[in-house]
Image (cartoon, rainbow, N blue to C red; front, side, top):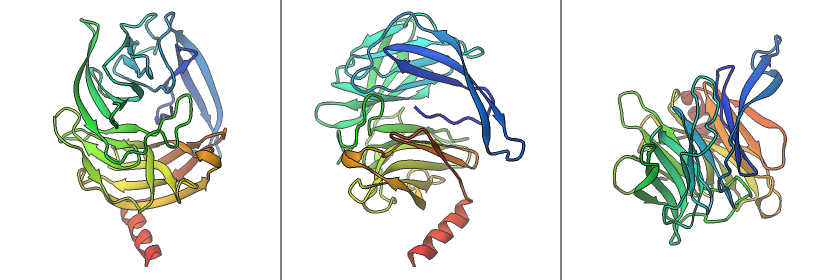
Length: 304
């Protein structure tokens, strides 16, 4: 998965061959261009000794010392890690727990004790919110938010990129909300029962497949496809009014291959930066997030 952090050290958690690894990320900035990374290294600092299920699609997420592996069709697993060193626990506290669904291809942390799992629920796709109880070693399924008119398995890329992603909007002095990309865009309060709000401000024909919320700038960036899946693009929404976001701009970033190969797979945003990755490419795309007023004005002018 793709994460973005302005700090010089972050934790990257990978699921490889059913084993979790943790790394320390180090970078050196080019002295001639402060936005350009000239050197990157990864130092292995932890590895679990117990395997967990990760097939056929899997996602991972971590927050505040808790790491969740969504587990695909094999049940979700939960590890702990040291927030100072990034070192993972050797064994899972909760291992391959079945929540009664077909599978969970991805996961987002709501808090360190609450996980939002992308879910194939037999009768459709959506988000299952589960409480994490480390003392009783259990995941408690609390609610399900269904996505209507989902893209289903369209655009899925094995083994770790399924078109049903989510991201939290952490608001100062307000409710924290969860944005979901699964073709349609939805927003909901993951800690309360109710129906998701469908966001209809994205351009016609855009199918959202990935999302990252930049809480600092109050924007959500959605990666997806347009032109019946022939091209990849990202869409920026102003979420200052979180249940009624406004469209800022859309940037086409490439043409897709057959059956969606080569499409945009992940997006991330922090500060004034937007980064994205494409299937089959070793490069990371990088754009600057313009001021919302300027972007909106330019978009209106281009439409006119």
